[in-house]
Amino acid sequence: MAQSSHDSGRLRLGVNIDHVATIRNARGGSHPDPVNAALVAEHAGADGITAHLREDRRHIREPDLAAIKAKVTLPLNLEMAATEAMRDIALATQPNAACIVPENRMEITTEGGLDVVGQRRRLAPIMAALKDQGIRLSLFVEADHDQLHAAADLGADIVELHTGRYCDLPAGDDHDAELHRIIAAAKMTEQLGLECHAGHGLRFDNVGPIAAIPQVIELNIGHFLIGEAIMSGLSNAIMTMRRLMDEARSS
Image (tube, rainbow, N blue to C red):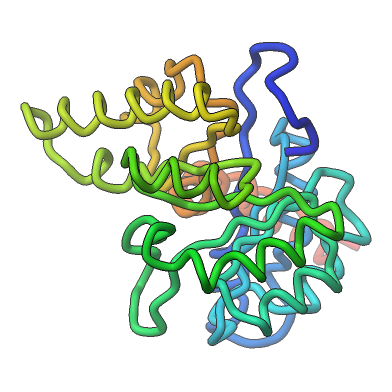
């Protein structure tokens, strides 16, 4: 995220920590702390941190953004809706990049790409304000010719291709066609001078074909990694708790 071009050929990983905050908010209090999750991600080899500040604050909240900026050295990618309120928060936060995403209060998760073609008038002033402050502009879009051209016309630096449909489709012709659509869109971003990212729904079993696309510079992955951590990281947490309990009793 800090880079503006693909310098080394190494695919970058942005880790979305939203759902650490979801777990915290379900109980209240401060645990688990998404900032600690960001620090763990940094230590584990992540290249950036992604956080989506939603209108209803269902997971990440403003103090989380401030704490990430203060304590984490990785670049911050702020996902946000195209509203004046979110624009002002982004300007105050000064993330490395702001990724504008569609947002529906009733949705469980982001349901598709941003309609850049239909929302040019709404997007233009918000994007201009962010760009004036040196914040890199990213638009979360479908792998669609018209949407990519509109993103370039509006001055986006980055597009993040929505991989949700590819991830949800079962193996077969439709799945293969969606993958080819993403590949074609990634090639088009190169022609349009856009940095290409991809994300949504990526897992261990489906990330390979997306990661193999040479024009894709960064993947943003969150929900799966947090869910997987509950399983693969739980054993270590239990062993540490058992040790602390035993040490306390023996002393």
